[in-house]
Image (tube, rainbow, N blue to C red; front, side, top):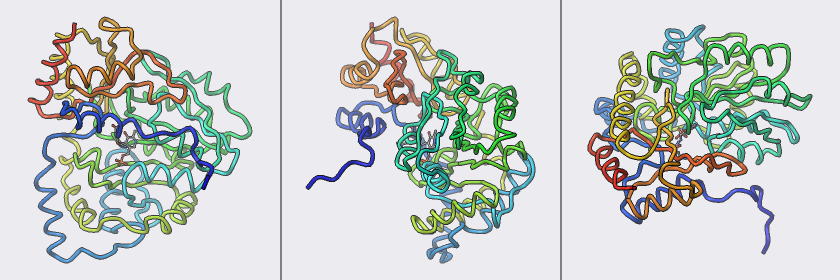
Amino acid sequence: MHIPSKLPQVGTTIFTVMSALASELKAINLGQGFPDFPMNQSLIGYVTDAMKQGFNQYVPMQGYMPLREVLAEKIASLYGPAPSPDTDITITPGGTYAIYTALTSVLQPGDEVIVFEPAYDSYIPNIEINRAVAVRIDLQFPHYNIDWDLVRSKITPRTRMIMLNSPHNPTGAVLREEDIRQLKSIVLQTEILILSDEVYEHLIFDQLSHQSILRHPDLMERSFVCFSFGKVYHCTGWKLGYCVAPDFLMKEFRKVHQFNCFSCHSPSQVALASFLKNRDSYLSLGAFLQQKRDYFASLMAQTRFSPLPSYGSYFQIYRYDRISEEPDRDFAIRLTRQYGVASIPVSAFYRQATDHKVVRFCFAKKQETLEEAAERLLRIT
Ligand code: PMP
Ligand code: GLN
């Protein structure tokens, strides 16, 4: 039997490919982005308590109300006007799902969506499965800034949405105030929507402030903003996140969500509602990850890799031009096989596999993991 593929250009995600190779070869996995240190023990305690107290049945489709209330308060304290916990926040099974659902709830066939490459690998397939068109714009190598004049030149009557991601995966670049000014000058008099992927929200370094779309009511009126509890609280396997959007967009979002997932894991929502009351649970995260970034960079300084700056997320990308001229995919695979360290080739984040000969390392790891990885990378001549 032959069925036409809905995603003919898509293979298996690079994260699965590199993690499978790392596990087959027992390599140190600095590829796929997940911490190898334990998550917060008190958060685990809250989940256990919630289960024992009987929070084991469905919560409402929109998410556990006390969690939505805590999130609204947190947003008000960090960024600006509180969204309504009733109409503007929905808990989802992870950030990826929130992004997919947002796109699916508004895109019509033929709509154009501006996407910056390198782009997190789910974005373009999520657009295309909705028969919309990804309009790809390269971030400017090697600093990965947005060329806003180029963005202006790509706007057409079919432009439905612009997708943003800050802090950025895979580069660690972050949006600046000037970027937000430029974005406003492009979208405000139009019907263009924004999808802002802010899953690395608190993981931002060097005293920079996170330029959340939630700071700007005039942008929020047209935006889906997507978050991941798994990413920031070191429990990627929980696959829990949320989306914030104005009422008219959230109504559409929930129409899709209610018939796909309906409601998410209850005990972890109950636990997070308690955990997030303590502001330190998130305000301490940037400094913690910055210390890891700096420690890894100090170890890598002795190798032949050259870093590009990372201002946020838990990734840093490195050039390897002093080591090899191989394509990045071949290089990343050889690094895993010969030296036992897995990374992610950055060409995987481009539809045309653009290869600037850089690989991404995840530094959200225990000190000894980073030390062992750097020691192995030091052997490369
Ligand atoms: N967006 C980006 C840029 C990410 O790196 C991730 C991490 N996987 C996600 C979204 C989604 O996170 P989650 O695991 O919560 O789906
Ligand atoms: N966000 C993670 C990364 O960039 C991976 C998530 C996934 O495997 N889908 O490594």
